[in-house]
Amino acid sequence: MFQLKPLRARSFKALALSAISLLIFMPLVSSAQNTQPKPSPTQSQGMGGVSTGATINYTSRRTVGITDPRAPLVFEDMTQKTALAKFKHLSGSSAKNYILEGVSGGIAIFDYDGDGQPDIYILNGSTIDIMKSGGKAPHAALYHNLGNWKFEDVTDRAGVANERWGMGVAVGDYDNDGRPDIFVGNYGISRLYHNNGDGTFTDVAERVGVARKGWSEGATWGDYDGDGRLDLFVPGYVEFDLNNLPPNPSEAGRPGSVGQNFCQFRGTPVLCGPRGLRGEPDTLYHQKPDGTFEDVSVKAGVNDPQRYYGFSSAFVHVDEDDLLDLMVVNDSTPKLLYINKGNGTFEEVGYPSGVALNENGREQAGMGLAVGDYDNDGRVDFYITNFSDDSNVLYHNDGSGNFTDVTFQAGHGESTYPFLGWGTDFIDFDNDGWKDIFVANGHVYPSVDQHQWGTSYEQQPLLFRNLKNGKFERVSAAPSSGLAESWCTRGLAVGDLDGDGRVDVVMNNMDAAPTILRNVTANQGHWLELHLIGDVSKKSPRDATGAFAYLTTGSVFASYNDPRLHFGLGAATKVDRLEIHWPNGATETFDVPGVDRVLTITQGKGASNR
Image (cartoon, rainbow, N blue to C red; front, side, top):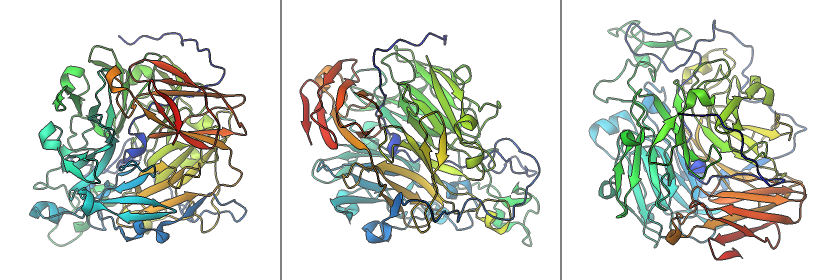
């Protein structure tokens, strides 16, 4: 039974929490809304949650072309200066007639070869015709970071082309050999690319038992049972039958068509789903000592018998114990929060915890998920993106697994309403020690450009500055800057790509090249990045997934959920205390020799410069 408990006292004057999971790797994508499309005479419906009422017409679009010539430059678009400009994402037809065509686009930032330079892996989609014919889908791409904003396409050499309809990607060192491996959630059959350590990968999904069939979305790695081996959770989205397709909105009104038998949004025919389509159950794979996995979803209580439309997930420390809990964001259905009971099972507490619905008691679209401590109280909070005509949602962690929707108090209500959000993350873009929020946007209905609904198909990204008082403000976009441009984005990944201590952004855009944004923020604070290595012999995963990192300075503190934990320090030039809580429950305290550097910390062996 889920019980409310008083918050455990902490002795730190200033601390921040980071549970290392796939967060920056997940696609954080979805396809739903809270303005419900008009149901057709069939059982299928357009994407949506709860109707917000009558159609409102606007004289201008509020999601594109909003700039301020007085605004400072924050992000510079580097795409055309890199090899990433040659990549072309493809996902179905330009009309987006089916829900399958509107979702693809996961992306990951990780150092696959251990040279200290974060690399980039970008998923690709496919088409209905290719899937039906059994042909090869467009390939994904792995870009090796050569430094100085030079990237080399090593996809073929590495053997990670995927050539399936890619949805989500999660990176983790599942076999504890010190090399990151790649799980790719596909529509069809998922893959697990094992890192061979020589620049190549081998798909071992069938052999180890994680070749999930169906529609797999934003997976997450985590050692939920504390045996030192990473386990894998994969949300299931929609049962989509290529041989029994929903009504095609492009055929509406054509001679011989089925007339009004179409899903509609504000009277306009649109793609159907997820409402009206059958959802898929979720899957939890437990890793056995021999390196293979077994499906324990039902036994653990996380299989989602309601068949909600699973989209994003994260293993994360929600309460005050040392066990990894599980957050699952669903599309157009309630969100799920599983509390780890410590016996191999979980208890679902979405409703009593306060995260299942928004503050008005409504289901939301549930697309992207960001996990981070925005108010520096030592507890992880959740930020979730949603459909246009609805706001994104910010859940404050009140302690003991209880959350409060503080969206409007924090300034994320009206400011996000016209946007359709996808990938999102907490990032300290100016290194002032307080987590800001980045949101990638883009609609799912190309036809919105034909109407004055105040929104658009391609949309600007959003950056919200943390005002350090529980509130945020939108950072204005300088003309021609990265924040001023518009894309139809799905996946988002963040990381320090050039080693200058500033967090950069990469986005995967529908039917276009990706976008790579260099953080050029002036007046940056000091920073510290940590690369943690767990002790496998003591039952800590080698990549330290699930570790806590607490850092205290004389004035400010922060943390960042990344394979290399990023701490913005503000004006502080000295770290008073660094405390690591390893996945096996052990705690170590370290002296930090200085700031503005990368430290490698190995469990039981101390810290060293990169």
